[in-house]
Length: 172
Image (cartoon, rainbow, N blue to C red; front, side):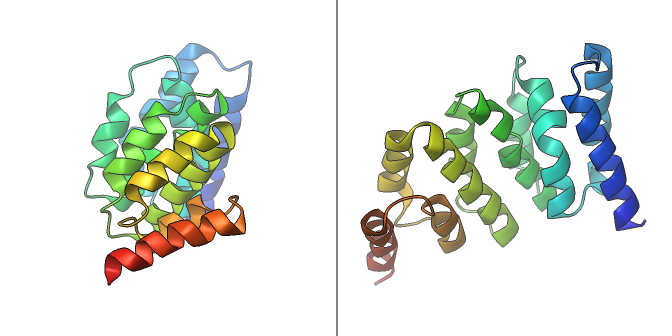
């Protein structure tokens, strides 16, 4: 029931998932525990501290269908998990899942999902700026403002103004 206890547990899971000494069997146990007890992972900080390595790291060389299921969940923390977990793939230069899941989450109602989506888009843009710009060309006009703002943070002022302008002109 105590948030700090859950935060400690998530931190321990993250440290174990990151460790080179952790066996594949233990990684699966951590992943299964995360998904089984997602009801306890019910705040942005718990998702962010744990999902990248526990979920993303585990799925790195496996099918990622579960992320798409989580992206469609009624639970906002599961939806946030779906996009934040892709940070692990982004670090490896694998961007497809990030963009597909981001597109799924564009209509989400929750700001904390928008923030995570924008964060992952910005991170993906660090690896492949033209691909981010292509995504923004297609979606900036209708993206939630928070997601758009987060995703364009590292663009130059002219580009930021351009994409913000697309959003404003679509609202008129």
